Amino acid sequence: MLSNALILLLGLVLLIAGGDVLVRGAVRIAERLRLSPMLIGLTVVGMGTSMPELAASLQASLVGSPGIAVGNIVGSNIAIAPIAVDRRTLWRDGGVGLLAAAALLAAGATVGLSRATGLAFLLMMAAYIVYAYRQERLGGSHTAAYDRGAAADQVDPALAAQDHPRGRLWVALLLFGAGLALVVAGGGLLVNSAVGIAGDLGVSDTVIGLTIVAVGTSLPELVTSAAAAWRKQGDIALGNVLGSNIYNILFIGGVTGAIAPTPVPAGIMAFDIRALVAVLLVVMLFAFSGRRLSRREGGLLVAAYAGYVAYTAGLF
Image 1 (tube, rainbow, N blue to C red):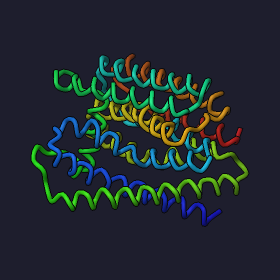
Image 2: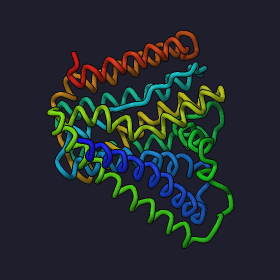
Image 3: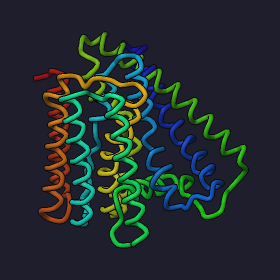
Image 4: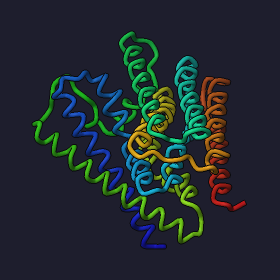
């Protein structure tokens, strides 16, 4: 049990560190391809910061652990600092998140994360990025896709794209390759140890996927949202959370389904995805009612999540 826990921790460290190195390399390569900083933020940074979750879900699906694969996708972050929000942004990006969750629910009730479902999710992800890019070009309120990249840039300025390439191409390629290797290695360690912990505790891998794996792989996004909230940048903080929900379902679920189709476990279908939809609705209601997520409302969400984890683990 202890050895599996240490291996899981090592896997998380490799995933998070590898994801950061991979994104840095990918940003430099994208700069060399003369992509605009805005497009790099929406695609390379936005998707790259999801690499820990993607690696865990994809490798879990490949080794036949759908509970970890889908449970990790359903797991989400909770912001605990007061956050002021723009209602138009909330309904637009929160609505997209709800549609994505509804699409996952529909897929689970029918064909699961099949290859066709995965490709459909990726098309939806591409459509959202095109929409976000056009919105940013027109100006006005930022989209959650933009806020996701902006939040990552604030925590790690090295991820910010520039108009002119920095450094040598071979260094960028080396960073990308090293990051990819670390992510793959970390994902393998994480999944194997998570399966071992589930066996040691006598619980299903779904429980581990919905709790330990989901929280662990989401730590970078939790840090970026908390940092933005601390700086009183509420739109970026909430936008990062909403963007995370969209990217996790459409991008991670899409890639997982397209490469390694997997069923959605009955337990996740019966409760967890519905709980995700309910949480999204509650967050939108909280934020809309007073134009902010207050500390008390954040505390309620944290308490609700603690109750959810206890229920999932079978403690009551």
